[in-house]
Length: 127
Image 1 (tube, rainbow, N blue to C red):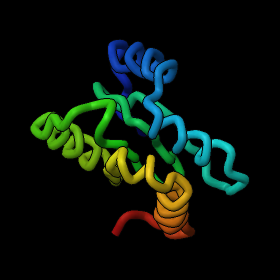
Image 2: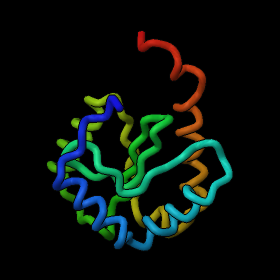
Image 3: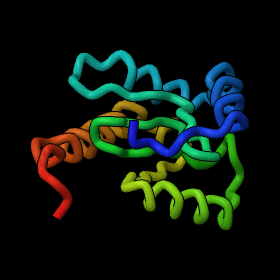
Image 4: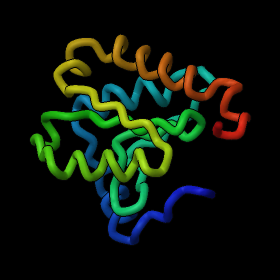
């Protein structure tokens, strides 16, 4: 509930994007969503004016698949990362080529990262 409210525009974009995932996003989503682990992920999740490729609420981690789908828009990516970081979210960028080469390894790394981030320390006040 402490999430910055998504804009109507980013919500609409998220809905549209969920229907047309790129191949790397699709491969990764299948692994993230079918996992029997405790972590839940959301795909094409609107955060403020932006849409995150994937989001793990428990770990406050945003996963962006860079490449095929969106050519490098460096300035926009920096602004977007800064916005996410200002909300206390961690942004992880993964090249689409890495996902295509070995989706299982990428998914495992994401799980490891998010499991560490979602550990018991999340109940402690930030210090």
